[in-house]
Length: 392
Image (cartoon, rainbow, N blue to C red; front, side, top):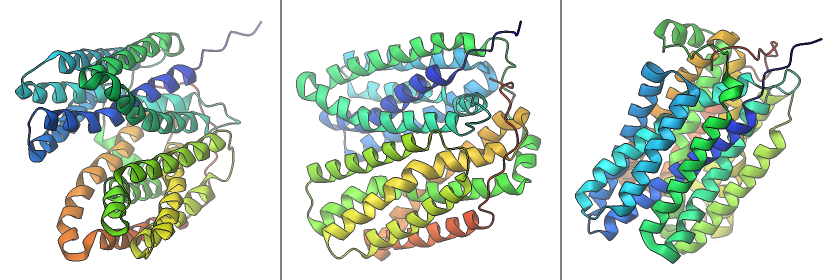
């Protein structure tokens, strides 16, 4: 009689990723708006966003260096998020916002470092992209639902109601952490971050190629998300509501593409190449747009690279290393996103006075072209057998 198979972390992981992205996508919008409603200046509100991401880094570091347990770090992270939401919803003095933002960021960071690698290692050998496809889909759904939930609740109950609703989402994340304990029972603890392991991963051409593509893509992601709406209003006269509707459409197309990709078993290297090619076309189309329909086409083209570049590059990076090194490789791969998403807004601030917002998209097209060359250097996929055992 065969031994029973270990439960999969796929469903709990999906729920955790969805709840986490719903919270993060809401908080980066709601906390600055709340600060301004309490009388803070725009610059002070911007500092709260910096505190949010600083806390995110602290939380991720605590998970990888101190806790090193997916269930525990997830439960603690969502617990901290829930407590922070209640604190923000009940507090009165605006000075307390800094503490709330920092604590929220720490809660955001705690569940993140291991989640994508655990879901990847739980993919079936005949469906190797399922884990990252499901992870990516959950992120996309959360990205859409977060702002919609915040805007809907705010209209009825104001900011305290928004923070109360987000506290309930955090409670669902704790439930997801509890539900996934059985799937993680008996697995090795995640490894401590190792510079030699990162060097070994970066020494592999497949990992280095995926890392480079994701780094260059991550330089462009904040440009599209932060400046797409500004450009729409500045050049084409679209209202904020119309810009929000356009982004909602982009994200919906992105979710559809992610769902369609979950069961893919071959050809992901070519999917990555095609997606980065569309990223080049999108940046050129937006940067050179002379009318709002052309701008809309450019933004809709962006929905495919938004859906596919990160998860496929992540998958190819993981497949290029041994199963036992996937988690440490994940730490290094995530750094490519984190560093780029901090640098990109700062670089845009420097460039805009000289080239304008449209010019930044044209510079972005050159960056996307470099990503295309990196992806084209070897578009075939590695197909080593997957292991369901490993760090969790």
